[in-house]
Image (cartoon, rainbow, N blue to C red; front, side, top):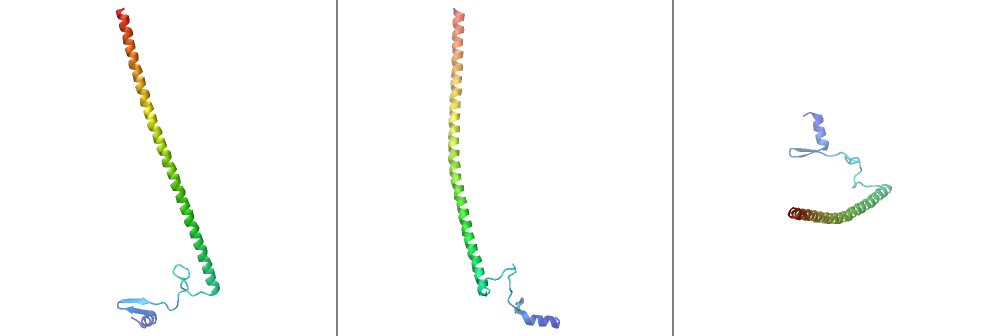
Length: 128
């Protein structure tokens, strides 16, 4: 290790066994994301601006939550209506199938009656 490295390590390096931690020489004005830390001491005007901004965000957050709840409740109501409509349509389909079966049975009975009538007619015609 050269002398520059030794000076660098001695100024801002904290060693924890094999681990070397480089402490900041001065307080960072912003976080790595570019915004100011919420723990930073602010002047009166900056503090008021931050508090106003935080209050606006709280209000917007509350409005967004209410809007989401309203949308959710509307969707639940619509779901209930659609399930009711589905139940009604299912019942209608069952009634229509029942009606269809009844009509088919009637047709079959009429066909059987006609064949019997035709048989009776033919027998009467033959034996007369």
